[in-house]
Amino acid sequence: MSPHKEMVKDEIDQFLTCARTGRLGVILNDEPYIVPVGFAWVNGQIAFHACSKGLKMDALESNPKVCFEVDESLSDGSMYKSVLVFGRAEILKDNAEKIPYLQALINKYRVHEEFDAYINKATRKPEAEMKAVRIVLITPEKITSRQFIKFGKWE
Image (cartoon, rainbow, N blue to C red):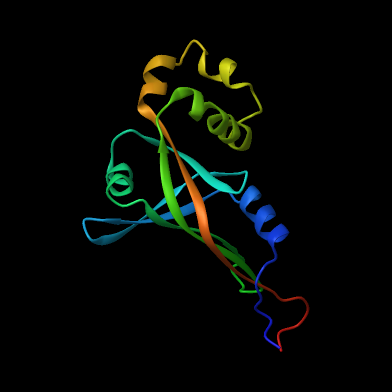
C-alpha cells in the first residue's frame, strides 16, 4: 500500500483555508505562465485580488481556463501535501461584488478589521484603489490532491 494518498474533502477545505500562497497557472501568448498569489478559499472557490492591468489580467481575459496549485512540504521529505484546482476564472469589477472577497482576504492576511474601516484609513485612497483592484474567482471543475506523511523511522 502506497504511503501517498488523496486527501478527503474536509482535508482539502482545511488545507486551502490555511495555506498562505498558491500558484496560478494560465496561458499567456500560447505559453504557460505561473505566478504566486495570496488567496482565500471562500464557499468552494479560490478568490484573489489583482490589479486591473498586467500579465495575469491579459492572460485571464484571453483564456479563463486556469490551474491553481497549493503545496506544503518539509525539507527532509517526511511530509508533503498538494492540491490542484482546475477551473474557470471570473473577473469581478463591480465594487459591491468585490467587497465580501476583499473582506475575506483582509481577514486572512491582516488583523481582522471591517472592510469600511480598512479602506477608509487616512493613508488610503479608497476610490482609486477600488477602481484599480479586481477580484478573480476560480470555480473548480476538478480538484486533485496528494499527501504523504511519514511518522517514525525511514524504512
